[in-house]
Image (cartoon, rainbow, N blue to C red; front, side):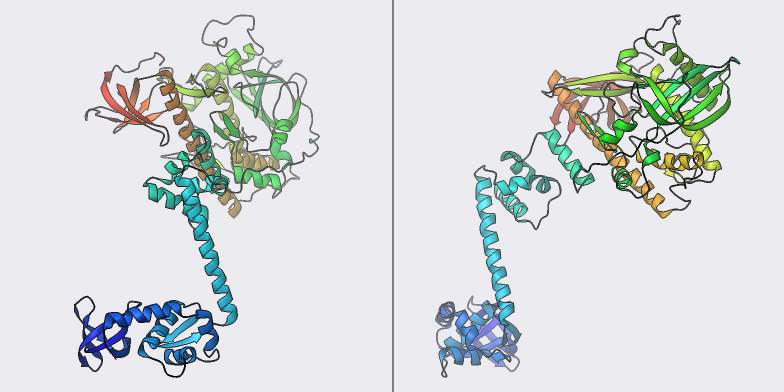
Length: 626
């Protein structure tokens, strides 16, 4: 047998037959029969005899070494060599195999022995060793727990710990958590996705709940606010004239009634139109807990079957303009002459009596202001609403936005019963009620925005000098609406921007109150940024859930074909549903807004997608309803 060496390479101990020694290197034949060069500083010892047997014996002896005894035996004060450690453990006369075994053992347990150089080590201090061993034990226990959970998951069972973390695992996983590691490992073994595995074992709730969970984790990572906010004493405001009999117009399910209107005849033949807006901002103090909630929520979240209110229920109940109640409000009074010119305006903080909460579903079929009008009323305030509609049309003409030949657009209301049976109700956008209400609010919002601008006060303005609408802390024209100034004031129970603007407006009406925000206030810029991003996220979630329930409706009704209108490229807006989809096979010469028949080839409820194929072109819509 020739000369052999025992050496380290890539963290492993190996043996090889020496062919030639050249000072700094050895030319060797490895165990695998390959010729290689080994640097001398990687070689620990040389020996004669069978190389394979040597390595096997050294490895076996290393496995028998009592590491704790070895740690006790070596010098703890200074660094030591492997030879010294072997002498302490085996005795003064150490064989090559024993020395190799000690080297293998020392390298195998770095928590006991710190490597300081070639064949040189330092014993770990006792405290460090105990901590390291405890960590290793914890790691072993964690691995055992992960493997136990993996076995349960593969057997179709849901461990309680994973069930408790299910929302986090599905929507915002901590990839270092044991529960996520177990799910990921089980999913990998099943060659499936985490979502699919969790759904198989029952960790995914109904899809609507699953989507809501994801939204809540993203937008409310600390959970929904459950704090109670004591109501202050309702402010003592002047009570409006008894002739002011305010009424609101909202959907049946509206509980946050922000706005109302009133109408009086004046002795000079003019009308006094009152626009009344709820004013919770009057009693919300800067930097108080409730204001922080407003800035955290920024808006009420709406989605089919539910909502998350910006303000707590007790504050909504106290300030909503509910029927039969005397409620604080900011009122804008407009004196309007017989040709619908506004001859003067006045803004007041006052308490108003709300005579009626009219509901659109109850009155819309009777509100027909474009048809001959009766001397009797089919519902309260019908005559006042007829006049307000005429005023609204006049205002649209002033703004340059009146278009009687406008093609119809639609809003959709999705209703669910306890069995999640879907009803989708369609309303034409721009109906007489919509026209009347929107024009009244545009007038109020633009008037108050101009007041802030003239007073040099900052606010959250809606501006569109060119291009797209955006928000700004300074007023600019809004060409889409045809007004010089515009900001939201009219939904303070539901939108944070309205709260900010109301606080600024109140400082003009109550000089003893300072504006909430000064110009160039850094916090106001932060509120603007947060409002835009949050409002956009809420709107996207609402669209997502409307699309989901639209797909459920299609399945529920057994619909096989749809009609749609091309938006651009292959993106089509589905008629009769709040849904868009990409359609395969649209002719390359199809123009935007062209209508088509579409066949449904598949629906994926998890991804909220629908597969659609072009069938044929349809005649364009003229003035008929969908």
